[in-house]
Each structure stands twice: as C-alpha cells, then as structure tokens.
Length: 228
Image (tube, rainbow, N blue to C red; front, top):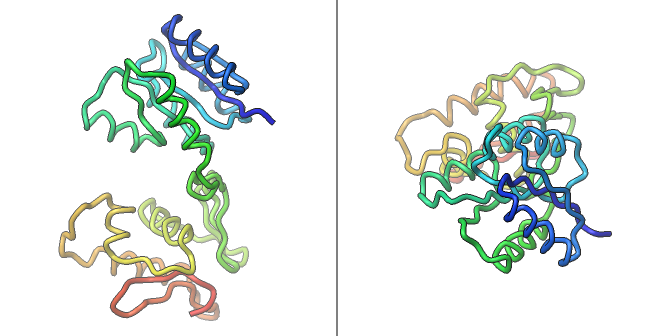
C-alpha cells in the first residue's frame, strides 16, 4: 500500500514541485497552501508523514506541528525552512519535528530524509497513545494515569518522568538520562531533583498493598518494571 504524505507549503511552485515529485516516487500526496487547512487534514489522521513549511501566512509550521502533537498524533514530520540557524533547528525539533531540511533543497535529500523517518520503528516515533506496565496505565492524549483502576494525580513534570520511565520499562534509566530527557539539562546541576521526584512518584504509584513498580538499581539509576 502506498504511503500517504501531507504537504503544507504556501509557495505555489514549491508545493506543486513537491507534490509531483512525491507522486512520481510512489506516494499518495495531499497538498495544501494553508496552515489551518493543513492542521485539519493532519488531525483527520491517516497520513504516514508530513512535510511542513516553517513560514506559513495563517498558521506557521511549528504552531501547526505543536497542535498536532498536543492532539496526540505522532505522525512523523519534516520541516522545510529558509532559516538555518542552530536555534531555529532546535526550536523545530523541540516542537515535535523528526527532521529539518533547509531551503533551497534537492528532492533527493528530502526523499532520503523522508524514507529515513518512515523506516523508524513505531516505538521510536512515539506512535503509542497508551503505555502500560503491569496494572499501571498512562493515557498520553488525556494525560491521565491509573493503577488497577485507581486514578493517580500527577503534576506535569511527574507525568513526563513517568512517561520517560514507561517508554524504557525493564531497562535501567540513569540520572543523566532523566536530566536530559525530562529536564533538558546537558549538565548535572548537583541537586537532588531526581531523587525528590522519584520519591513523589513512588508514593503516588506504589500503594501500601501494591507491588513496587519503581526500583532503584544501586550505582546505576532506576528501573520501572512489575518485577525487581
């Protein structure tokens, strides 16, 4: 079955060129010049990937992408932009982009990058909307957590940390990994922020009569698992 690609690009020549080239490559393409119309298409679902222009007149590409991610759609996205600064690329990646292509670009490069994001395993693209570990469940769209039917009220940072652990359940997660993955620190601030949040999570998740799910791996970090 042919992969479906959404192209959102307000420049007529670029949009027509991309749509034609992608179709000739074998993709099924939906192309629009409007960010708002592109958003409606994107949240309608069914696309395997998106190619989004950064600068759109009504709703810019990053705002479109953030709305798509907030709605729970993990569709791989490549951002097209004439802005080539490092800060601009970082902003795009933090908004949920899978890759960044700077204009002017060659179709060969874009095609190769598109193939690369489409090859990524589903788990690395975050396509799950629910995560589970034993009787603990995390709803990534509703942003809720339950254990054995019991609602667990989590602060935003606690939810982020739990999601990070659940995506790596059964594996050791180090303090450095948590600092980088949850707090976006590229250095150790020498605080006990990780220990404090792990302690809070344990109190909320591991009830008095429930088996522990969060385990300390001495000298290494933490592990989320139904068994020690």
